[in-house]
Length: 67
Image 1 (tube, rainbow, N blue to C red):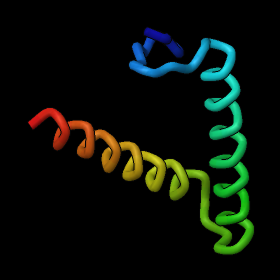
Image 2: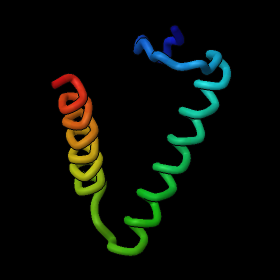
Image 3: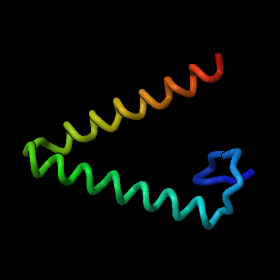
Image 4: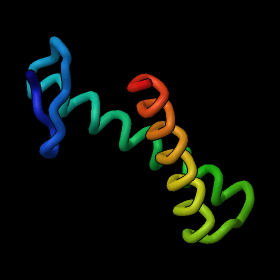
C-alpha cells in the first residue's frame, strides 16, 4: 500500500511515481485556475469556492462507492 501525504492508496504505484503524479496534477490544476482568472477576472475566493465544490463532488463519488 502506498501513502501520499498520510493518505493510504491501494495502487501499484511507487512513492516516487505517486509523488510525480500528484505534482503533475497540482501544476495542471494551478494552470487551469490561472487561465480561468485571466479569462474571467474572478477573485481568488471564487477559485477557492470552485475547488471546494470540486472536492465535494469527488468526496460524494467516494461515498457512492462505499454504498
